Length: 281
View 1 (cartoon, rainbow, N blue to C red):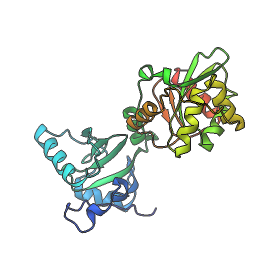
View 2 (cartoon, rainbow, N blue to C red):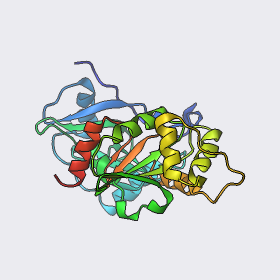
View 3 (cartoon, rainbow, N blue to C red):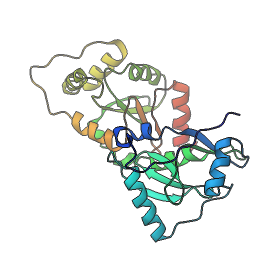
View 4 (spheres, rainbow, N blue to C red):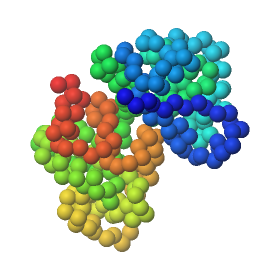
């Protein structure tokens, strides 16, 4: 097995440090921390430095958490990302840093930063993904569905929310897949993120006499929505702000009734499986 890279956080004064804009560019450290059966040079290095062992990290005292947060803010948070929480990780010596829509790991002093997945090999569980699913879960009942384009198949008893750009090719493929799913109501929040014309097209769809028909005609057969003499009040800006609040940076993005998310297009069979899971079946 090849060795995994490790990253040591340099002080803020390091040459070229602040020249790098993206947090993921600053910490491009992609590796798995394997829990239960140790393998890889990186884990050996981390064990020597932080005392990593297959046991949950000890909780920090209030003073220790304050000191760690201060150290991380000084070194890490340069692009406005807020540290939402710090908690013990499943690995002794490592602590989880919760950022908006993301999870990183550090040692108790904030000298080392890890970006990657913690996998419990004994139980075949991706613990990092489970945490991300938990922190990114959306309160479905709170979504402003009045701002969505709505259509349904059959009884429509199952519900699905989609964030979509009218110029998104994968959104069109997803729309075609969804036509085969029974008893489904789809709420589509149009967000213009791909081009300036996405905004114009989205407004034409929303302001059409039958916005549902206009949206489906465009997404399924590329039929242009009617051109209007004047625009109505559209929710596109509100939709965009909501998508940013949820950390949605691409389309399509799906939200299921249990608040779980899928940030990609998917085959009808995969959507069906997730709908059943969201319904507890």
